[in-house]
Amino acid sequence: AAAAAAAQLFDLVWVQWTLQYLVDAHVVAALRSLASRLSAGGVLVVKENKPCAAGGGGGGAAPGLAFRVDTPSGPHGRYDVTRPDEHHEWLFACAGLEVEHAESGCVGGEVTA
Image (cartoon, rainbow, N blue to C red; front, side, top):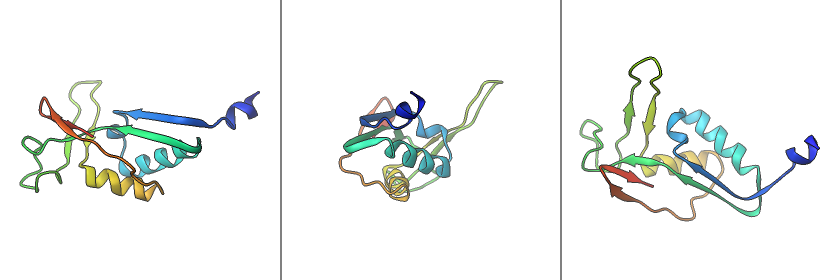
Protein backbone atom coordinates (compact mmCIF):
# COMPACT_ATOMS: atom_id res chain seq x y z
CA ALA A 1 0.00 0.00 0.00
CA ALA A 2 2.83 2.40 0.85
CA ALA A 3 4.58 1.70 -2.47
CA ALA A 4 1.35 2.35 -4.38
CA ALA A 5 0.82 5.65 -2.54
CA ALA A 6 4.44 6.66 -3.18
CA ALA A 7 4.01 6.06 -6.92
CA GLN A 8 0.78 8.08 -7.20
CA LEU A 9 0.86 10.85 -9.80
CA PHE A 10 -1.42 13.87 -10.00
CA ASP A 11 -2.94 15.82 -12.88
CA LEU A 12 -2.93 19.04 -10.85
CA VAL A 13 -0.81 20.29 -7.97
CA TRP A 14 -1.81 23.69 -6.53
CA VAL A 15 0.65 25.63 -4.36
CA GLN A 16 -0.60 28.88 -2.86
CA TRP A 17 1.22 31.31 -0.55
CA THR A 18 3.83 28.71 0.38
CA LEU A 19 7.03 29.53 -1.50
CA GLN A 20 7.25 32.92 0.21
CA TYR A 21 8.26 31.16 3.43
CA LEU A 22 11.17 29.33 1.79
CA VAL A 23 14.66 30.46 0.80
CA ASP A 24 15.50 30.14 -2.91
CA ALA A 25 17.31 26.77 -2.63
CA HIS A 26 14.32 25.27 -0.82
CA VAL A 27 11.91 26.74 -3.39
CA VAL A 28 13.83 25.02 -6.20
CA ALA A 29 13.89 21.72 -4.29
CA ALA A 30 10.16 21.95 -3.52
CA LEU A 31 9.27 22.74 -7.14
CA ARG A 32 11.35 19.78 -8.37
CA SER A 33 9.72 17.48 -5.85
CA LEU A 34 6.21 18.65 -6.69
CA ALA A 35 6.84 18.43 -10.44
CA SER A 36 8.07 14.84 -10.01
CA ARG A 37 4.57 13.92 -8.79
CA LEU A 38 2.83 15.20 -11.95
CA SER A 39 1.31 12.82 -14.47
CA ALA A 40 2.13 13.25 -18.16
CA GLY A 41 0.49 16.55 -19.12
CA GLY A 42 -0.03 17.43 -15.44
CA VAL A 43 -0.01 21.05 -14.30
CA LEU A 44 1.68 22.73 -11.35
CA VAL A 45 -0.14 25.94 -10.38
CA VAL A 46 1.72 28.42 -8.18
CA LYS A 47 0.00 31.43 -6.63
CA GLU A 48 2.20 33.84 -4.70
CA ASN A 49 2.15 37.50 -3.77
CA LYS A 50 4.69 39.83 -5.31
CA PRO A 51 5.65 43.39 -4.35
CA CYS A 52 3.26 45.98 -5.75
CA ALA A 53 5.14 48.48 -7.95
CA ALA A 54 3.60 51.41 -6.09
CA GLY A 55 4.29 50.14 -2.59
CA GLY A 56 6.73 47.27 -2.84
CA GLY A 57 9.69 49.10 -1.38
CA GLY A 58 12.99 47.80 -2.66
CA GLY A 59 15.08 50.87 -1.87
CA GLY A 60 14.76 52.47 -5.27
CA ALA A 61 14.66 49.27 -7.32
CA ALA A 62 12.88 49.42 -10.65
CA PRO A 63 9.13 48.73 -10.36
CA GLY A 64 8.45 45.01 -10.58
CA LEU A 65 12.03 44.08 -9.65
CA ALA A 66 11.80 44.76 -5.91
CA PHE A 67 11.77 42.10 -3.21
CA ARG A 68 10.01 42.58 0.09
CA VAL A 69 11.07 40.77 3.25
CA ASP A 70 8.82 40.82 6.28
CA THR A 71 10.69 39.94 9.45
CA PRO A 72 9.24 38.16 12.44
CA SER A 73 7.82 40.00 15.40
CA GLY A 74 6.90 38.25 18.58
CA PRO A 75 7.58 34.66 19.60
CA HIS A 76 5.69 33.11 16.66
CA GLY A 77 6.79 35.47 13.89
CA ARG A 78 7.86 34.13 10.50
CA TYR A 79 9.99 35.42 7.66
CA ASP A 80 8.13 36.14 4.45
CA VAL A 81 10.00 36.82 1.17
CA THR A 82 7.86 38.40 -1.53
CA ARG A 83 9.57 37.98 -4.90
CA PRO A 84 9.01 39.68 -8.27
CA ASP A 85 7.77 37.67 -11.28
CA GLU A 86 11.19 37.68 -12.91
CA HIS A 87 12.70 35.98 -9.88
CA HIS A 88 9.92 33.40 -9.71
CA GLU A 89 10.53 32.61 -13.39
CA TRP A 90 14.26 32.17 -12.64
CA LEU A 91 13.45 29.81 -9.75
CA PHE A 92 11.14 27.76 -12.00
CA ALA A 93 13.89 27.55 -14.64
CA CYS A 94 16.36 26.40 -11.96
CA ALA A 95 13.89 23.63 -11.09
CA GLY A 96 13.68 22.62 -14.76
CA LEU A 97 10.17 24.02 -15.18
CA GLU A 98 8.70 26.32 -17.78
CA VAL A 99 6.11 29.03 -17.13
CA GLU A 100 3.23 28.50 -19.55
CA HIS A 101 0.87 31.17 -18.22
CA ALA A 102 1.15 34.04 -15.74
CA GLU A 103 -1.37 36.53 -14.39
CA SER A 104 -0.98 39.47 -12.07
CA GLY A 105 -2.99 42.33 -10.68
CA CYS A 106 -2.73 44.75 -7.80
CA VAL A 107 -5.26 44.23 -4.99
CA GLY A 108 -5.02 46.08 -1.70
CA GLY A 109 -1.38 47.03 -2.15
CA GLU A 110 -0.31 43.49 -3.06
CA VAL A 111 0.07 41.99 -6.50
CA THR A 112 -1.00 38.39 -6.82
CA ALA A 113 0.85 36.45 -9.48
